[in-house]
Length: 204
Image 1 (tube, rainbow, N blue to C red):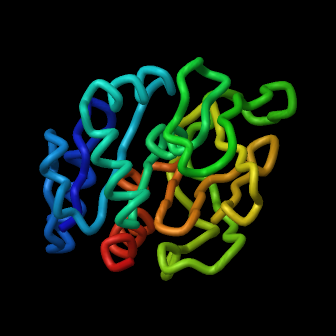
Image 2 (cartoon, rainbow, N blue to C red):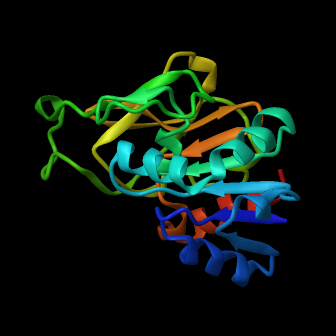
């Protein structure tokens, strides 16, 4: 069962609608015990880093997530700020992230971005895969995905970078370490590429 965690951050219903269309079973969960038997977990997130990790901490999910992800190796997918909180921390705030993937979140330097508006990075952009992954099977990399963010995840280890995207700098637009996955873009807003990615995650 895919469990989409509703801890107050992220458009969980839009993700659920895609799985409805795909006829893939899922559950939107609001209580930690509901993920006890999860075999896939989706961790959405929007807004500021501290606000998002703060809501997750207060939700009571964190201990159960640590058990499922770190001990039982259940695949997890962080989306947008849900990806950023997989890190050790962010320039945007002072709270620690989950620390599942080594690295920190940084703000784009608007002085090296030619496009306007410079920040946030808003709209469609392509991706470039840096390693093979079932998560990316059937993805049109040139078409890419829909982004909206002002901060990006800088991985400490290059091997944890799954895809890069260029916006002033080449940044990690998707990350992966063992059973832990994160995407900076919004698959639920990315039409066929997003549908394909969420379908791929369901079969990892």
